[in-house]
Image (cartoon, rainbow, N blue to C red; front, side, top):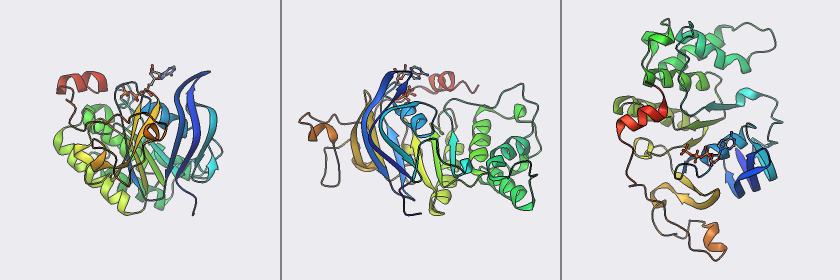
Length: 268
Ligand SMILES: Nc1ncnc2c1ncn2[C@@H]1O[C@H](COP(=O)(O)OP(=O)(O)OP(=O)(O)O)[C@@H](O)[C@H]1O
């Protein structure tokens, strides 16, 4: 339990034999709430997929909850909300059924969900503000609501580490605020959060630390508030350590227009 939630040491992650994230050093302690920032194509998703065993670790060390990546036995200990996904429109399942799937890693082989499992599913759905839609087909929900179903699906396993890829993209302001409340409660409960995002605004009260990925390199690791500012004493700029100027990352970058977000998110 004293192991960090995440430990990357000299980690190179990519696809096939192509390195995307290179020589990454990063330790995330239990209970931290970390934003992963960076421009399009910089390698944020690849970093998170490497941690989940969905991209190839080409070199160095990647440990998750104390185990080498891919060797964690209890899969429910790590939750994941993937990027851009909504629930398939063709899926006839209800909200309860989709979220129950997220609970399966916590069940034994062939074990049916018991009262504790059903309660965890109901709590997860309530946490994302969809308790009144529990028995509705997911296909009848809006794109933003479907993303909240996917967050609930990840929460249902009561993960120790929750990795989310752009959870607020394509979600309206009220739902973003609701999601921020959910994540604040999850974080207060001790769950470690790693959130890939372009918009820190909605989650600024939850995320305290930021890591910036720039062209596959971690160029900033420090307080979220300082992610666009010059390095302070608490900040670690690997680029500066290597004698290169660390490029600042502006949190005030222009955001995509709402329509552009919807198209990218594919949720409408
Ligand atoms: N499955 C894949 N196979 C090969 N290359 C990939 C794959 N997925 C992503 N890449 C490449 O890896 C690089 C980084 O992509 P990644 O999705 O990690 O960036 P990102 O920072 O998450 O971008 P965005 O903000 O647009 O989501 C890109 O050049 C992309 O083309």
